[in-house]
Amino acid sequence: MWKNTVISRLLNIEYPVLLGPMGGGFSTPELTAAISNTGGLGSYGAYTLTPEQLLQAGQAIHQLTSKPFNINLWVSDVDASLAAVTAEKIATVQALFKPYFDELGVPVPELNPVIPSKFEQQAEALLEVKPAVFSFIFGVPAAEILRECRKRHIVCVGAATTVEEAAYLEEAGVDAIVAAGFEAGGHRPSFLRGADDSLTGLLSLVQQLKARVRVPVIAAGGIANGKSIAAALTAGADAVQLGTAFLASDESAASPLHKRILQTAAAQHTVLSKSLTGRMGRMIHNRIAADISYATEVLPFPLHNRFLGPLKEAAAAQGRADLVNLWAGQNAVGIKAKGAASIMRGLIAEVNELL
Image 1: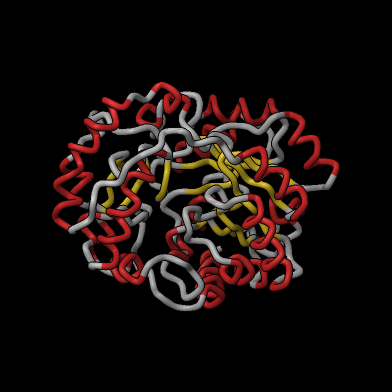
Image 2 (image 1 turned 120 degrees about the vertical axis):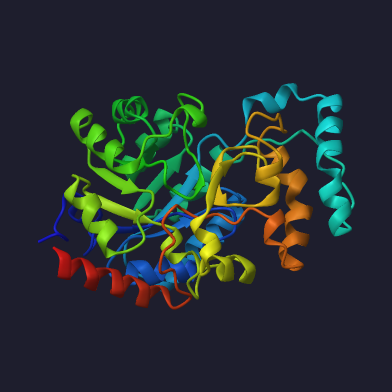
């Protein structure tokens, strides 16, 4: 039976189907709980939250479900290069983007490059929440954090975009690895090489990881329906992770503009760009990504993301999809705005027919 895998047993879930931990304000306790309550593993992307907000989110999820759920954090949430950014560099990037601000009638914001990492404090809050699963991207937490997770029987799941990253994660002692294929929406979680040098397709990456590591492998990237779930499991994955499929759901906190565009033909044209956040991510094609090439220097993350925050907020409010990053994986075929539990049940029914 397809649903009985090492991951479904490890996580104590009915189906080896995981919600992608959509950070950056897209996750909600309701979405997380809906997936867990339907037999999968709900996830909450918490990397932007303060420790206090993370505790509140965890409490809200616990009130909505008694089933296992996952909280996701970014190990590296501040680029090391931020420490060396100069006023001249900031001024150059501000000038480069000023025409877009002017077009929307938004003032170019002043910037403070001093941005401390929140990860260690967030990890302390996560241990207090005690989710069934702690997943992370952009690296590996300190050994002490992983030990504390084991004491609390929290399953630790890292993300890899290359075989080398998977081997690194396994050596660190993670319990499972997400194979983040080139097709995935959102930020590319590479941490050993540049994201632009870590672009393996999902089915190839799954098979490479299964040949190299002993821990279970979770396939992520371009999986949005029963056929792609079946393909990933047939390729050897022990579970699948879907994000874009639930991004337009009723419980998602994505903007109305984002949800609407996901259901149009425009969602089939995605690009990889760092021009809207400072780190490479896959999004629906937009004007800024087209105008400003990947080779163009922008500010380090998260300073660049903060810099463009007012612009993107105004663009969304004005319905300007051409000036905002609308995250999406390469397979947005058939995306519907309906309840997450309904989407989940439809996926399960489709896989049951196929496998």
